[in-house]
Length: 533
Image (cartoon, rainbow, N blue to C red):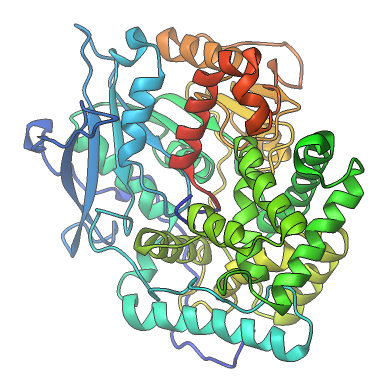
């Protein structure tokens, strides 16, 4: 669940000194690093977000030793312009491993001006990420093509992927062994309180997507008195961190891929892949078999192909372009189309290497993963038998945790009755964070309100063009107003936006033209959220 690209075996290693740790209490938080005036904000605006300012703040590497080694956290800000401020609104795009610096600019521009003006919208790169220092990069070029195929066709191919994942874990330990014990969600949550203190704020408002929902819930558990407003969108199931949550993704992404195939079949006049969704899906798997035998353009094997289509499971706005690529290969044997799509959707640059390194460091440290490869193999084979799209791909993405060189912590129990009512957003068909996660978090956060996008399959749904959802967000950020159903289910339901039109139809469709603003907002947001996050 991290940003992996520009858009996505136990080998007998013995680790000495493994100790299972328990997160320390909030009372161990370090003293404030200084008043708000100590933050030196400098202009760092971009063409898209000209009002952005940047600063850095120092935090303890080990929050239980506040006078020890320090790290640097990179911050961004769009300052409030109203006469009175409602305080800082910290925003996080997920991951773990996602950079939030640009997200501050997006959120400030996507909210109604009168609402945004009341907040200092604060982005940040969590510890280890992006412009924060030190930044992790365990194995540069780890995702360079062509990787081994994800679905094992022999014990030899399975062993190759196991050894590859184990070598990544070992490299992380060798290169960043001094940092890995402190790469976890509890430490990142305590960093948020360092940021709060540096801002000179008594409380923070927090708005997190994807993994950012778990980070926000952990912060609220550790520092309930410091929470003013809490918005969680596309919610991690806190009872499944992280092995069970990833297994749940396998089935959800497969269902989303079937929805994509049905959409392609509906638009057979454009894509010429047939009107039967099952046959369209079968054509996709034949394409995967074909690139296993002969990588398209010399760069797209089956693992790369899966990575190309993964973003479509996060956001249906990518479907038209992905369908064109799919059709070009199947109908015209166009390998260049796949190679170009790989660069657009899946190629991993240095930022992606950093994001994946942080992803593994945090997820492998946050909670226990099976150490027996038999467990991984059996669970993945069971998922693959029903959901063959991403089960093995997802397993190899997380497999470094099978041999991670640092012992796991115990997951935080996020149940909370000490914070103000929170606002939760969840789509019913979200693949990355399935619907049950939103229901579970709703139950655990007393007084929270759950707003559901019925029939929605996108991941990250507020500020993405759905006016119904955004109205609830605006009301909450304006004065704390929340919808209440009085029952045990969702407190409000919004209809999902319609699926996109093929690119050719969209050019001539008045309806599509009228929704251009919403589509642009969705594309911008999902570019910032990335994939695996």
